[in-house]
Image 1 (cartoon, one colour):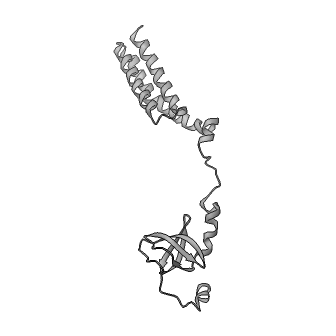
Image 2: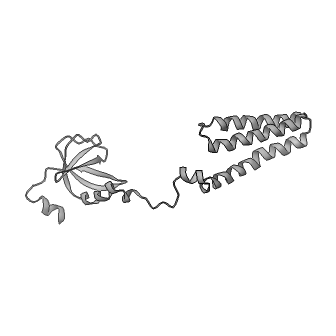
Image 3: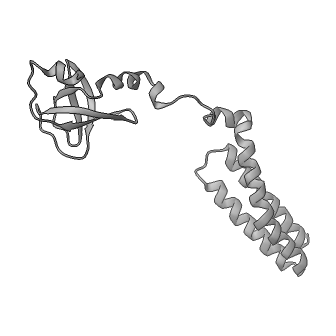
Length: 175
C-alpha cells in the first residue's frame, strides 16, 4: 500500500473518531485521538513525496474541517439525540416562572428578622414565613432586623435596619 493511500485512510479514521465523539461520551478522549490521527494522516501524505497533495490535505484539515465542525454544531440540536440532550433556545422558562421564586416579590420593601446569622446568606423571618435571603455583603447577626430591598435572580436581598416601632410597622411599610 502506498504511503499517500495510507495517509488518506488515517485521515478518514481521524474524522470518524471526531464524529464518534459527538455520540459517545468519552470526555474528549476520542477528540484527542481523532486530532492525533488527523495529524498523523497529514504527515503520511507529506511523507509520500507529493508536496502538492500534502498542502491540499493540510488546507483541507485546517480550513475545511473546522467548517465541517461548525456545520455539525448547527446540525446537532436538530438530530433526535441532540434534541433530547440540549435545551431548546426558545424555552420560555425563566427564573420568575419557577413556582418557588414567583412568590418572592411580595417581600420587597418588607421588614423581617434574621433567624440565623447572615454571612452573607441565611434565613429571615417575614411575618412567620422563613425565607432564604442574602445581604449586600455585610454580616448580619441573628435576631437583627432587616429590610428586603430587592429580588434579584430568585434571591431575596436584605439590608440591616434599626429596630422598627412594631405598632406602626404596617403603616411604615405601606406609606
